Length: 360
Image (tube, rainbow, N blue to C red; front, top):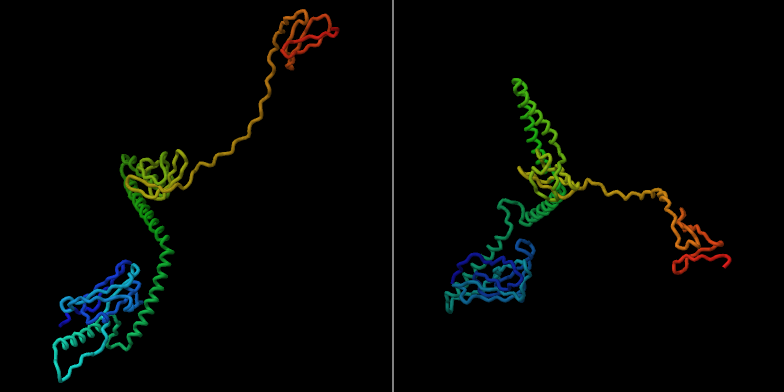
């Protein structure tokens, strides 16, 4: 027999929470020559060797042509756990050769295979060890302790750096935004310098260039007036809207940070982004219209009107009892009557005026 594979381990496998069977492809003499190691993840330094009662091993029938087999767990590992299968043959020499009796090549091959397995096990374990240089005076334990201390210090530094970053990242964003604004201002100042140089050159030319100089100076004044943050107006701007620069008044030299006032309803916004042809505003900052005032007090009633003209006297159908009647200035029915004796007048239930004489 022979051993054709040098690596005596399988994995690490990462559990999906349901798989229980894991394969290995190195030759073993018996299933107990394995160890199964489980860890929270593949990079942790803390691991656990499962007891053989927690899994079963099924070897391939022909370990010469198809080495290896399958480890089947009794219970699936939680999702994310790491599993490795390692060769763990006991370091024992169980073969005995005598000078009498049969001598079988298979026994010798098994003994040599076992020695090779031991060597490969040691190589695999050494491959995961810390080895100090041959000229070092430190032991591996000392070097490991130093590495762990450095790692712990580095972790502290990393946490401090993260805390500092969390503190300043807002400032960094603000500084970047300010840098963009400064870059825009630098370009604006360069434009001013170019126009100023042009105006200065034109100042030394003939009188025909006087108008050109004046126009250049007017451009300089207009740019300088709009260099800082300014307020512009638009009759239709709304929250988080992107619109053409031509909607603004004035529409030249628009930059991030400028304010835009909706001239229709008084809403105020700040420009958050500008392209060559458009501008974008953010959320509404405020409204420049004040709150509605309280209702005013009701005015005092005007003076009463004067009474109308006095109407003519009415004619009584009972001329023998009384003659004329009218409504006087106090609104009282007034009668002037002609009768044989003094009388009292009243209106009965039927609305008829009745006259009662004293001597009747």
